[in-house]
Structure formats: structure tokens, C-alpha cells
Length: 163
Image (cartoon, rainbow, N blue to C red; front, side, top):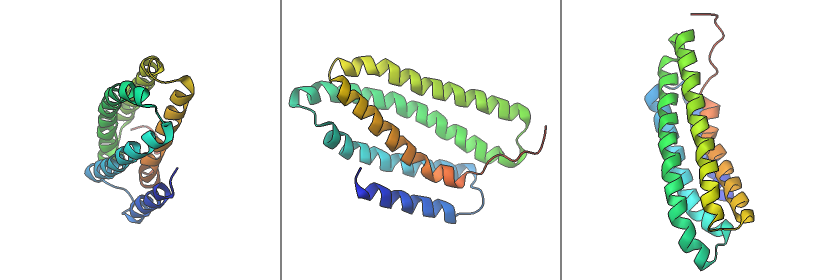
């Protein structure tokens, strides 16, 4: 991927690392929103460059991809809300709250897997399998980069026994 990605991610990470020990929910949500915005811009640039679609493939691919991203972004909105709730309840989270949170996390992750599987069939109707693998590789890398600032700045939940 292009060198600019690494530079911008290091910038985001250094901002996150320089922040207070833990962010509140609105700060986490804002950080995730900035990362998502940047990665959406990267998707717009990288995917056309890296997939090298023919004109016919592009005409068929982009409507499917736009629908796919819309569904993924709906799940990402749910993930942003989960992150906000985690940050807001970090210091006082009970086992019951933690259990509900992990259940919600698995619902979101299952939804992401479902969407990837569902759209794989649709993508395969408009692009070859090798291009689909390349697309999902790019999607995974971009998603991982979007999460980097959060990984750096959101602390692990303390192990303080049952609450």
C-alpha cells in the first residue's frame, strides 16, 4: 500500500498515544470516526488502483460494492456505539454489563462475517475470484489500520474480580 497510509496512521497513533490515560466515550467515538473517514478515502483511492477492473467489471462491481459498504458501515456504527459504551463504563463495569457487551460484540462480528460471505457470491458474479481475494485482503488491511488508534489508546479492562 502507499506510503501515505503509514504516515497518516503513525500520526493518528501518536495523537492517540499522547492523549490522556483513557478516553471517554465521546472521545473514543470521535477518534474512531476520524479513522473511518480516512479509511473511506483510502478505499476510494486504493480499491480502483489495486483491483484494476475492466470497464465492464467496474460497471457491475461498484453498485454491489457500494451496497456492501453501506451494510458494513451500519455494523461499524454499532461497533462505534459499543466502543463508546465501553469507554464510558470502563471504570465501573460490572460482570453483567461486561457479559452484555461481549454478547453485542459477537453479534457485530457475526454480522460482519455474514456480510462478507453474503456479498462474496454477488462479487463473484461480477469479478473473478482472484480479484475478490485481493479485495478482501485490502478490506482487512484497511480495517486493521482504522483500528490502530483504538488499539493503542483503549486500555484493557482491569481484572478486579466480580462486581
